[in-house]
Length: 498
Image (tube, rainbow, N blue to C red; front, side, top):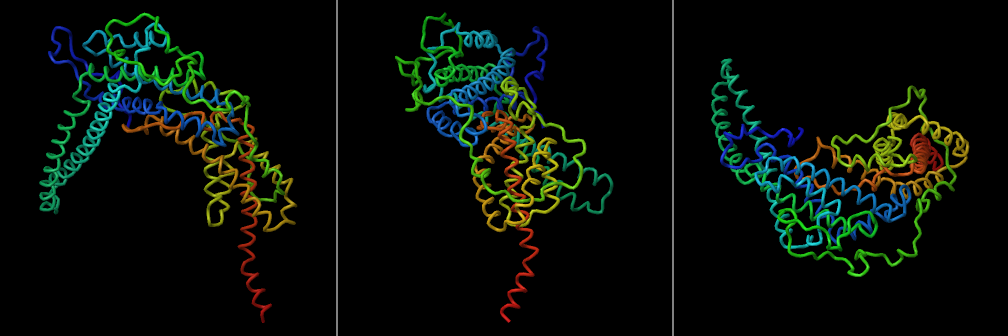
């Protein structure tokens, strides 16, 4: 179910007959709650603790280091750009909502936001950790929860009303279960009455009954505070961001969104550096990629395998691109270099292949021929050719090797999948979190695009996938041969004992 947008706002008639009470959000409460949730999530992701986790977690993860880059400045620049694009998306929704505000200052939010990004307005008085900001966040979370309950109540009421209509049709058709229908009709009517009261209650306490002014002023303040926080946290890594330490810009007279008493960002006052600075930052040189974890597997004796399909390659396959249904992060998505998985349009296709290979690797049962064929058909044409060539080059080696080769591949695959699979899982998580049709009111995106396969080096990613598939083939071939020879081996043991 797609959420209604701010462009679907109800008409309030001409100015001569405008209502005395200011207009309320009503059906737009759901879109507003969703964007409030995104804004709260963005706010919480910029705390000192979360930024520390980002630098010491995803930025340094083995999969990101090998496939994407070990250049921390580059990766944090991507993270900064993604957060700014998320914030701009939220700000655009608030700008549309602000057109229905009564307060003229709020109707000019879009102008104020653009002026702030251009450095025209002084932003040195906004405090990320202020008590006022904390209270606003608590209010928005309260409204999010109430609106989510309203949505669930409306769905329940809709189901009950559908059941009532079915009962009415049975009654009109003189169903032999009239007594049963009558009893159930009473029960359903009671449920509808109770559910209706819940809906009316949640409409009162949720964003449904809140004015455009109240909703916009809450979100606008946090939007400006989040923007300043992004400039503070990522400033040492992205020099193009607006400086937050100079206070000689034109002040704003009376703008709700920029009202705050203090500015207490955690910054070194003399050096303008972020509080989190690695000891070896000055010693580390930027590199395009990390150490090669596949070397161990590539040095192994690779065995023969039968992962090839007997059928022809056919027409190949259609490259699957980034299919996010909303407009978030489009500029960042389109900025992937030509040698990346994202530029080739294979981000989600390769993520599916890797996750499927991971599943097969950890299966305790034998991989079926149909499963292997399905996995092979998911590969693009060039990867099919590469895989076939690699399998043929090692075909006879596997005949001479035995259990030791399969066990060696198990160790190698466990290492490769250990750093490759998390990137694939993050890829699908990123897609689900930003898919407009799958978003919930309490959706809280946590995965950033640089953690996915989108910016991964295409050649390295395909090499890792081929390694995994060759290893699975070797394991499959040995395990299947052992299963086929199991009965004969037991019989030979019995005869030897005799």
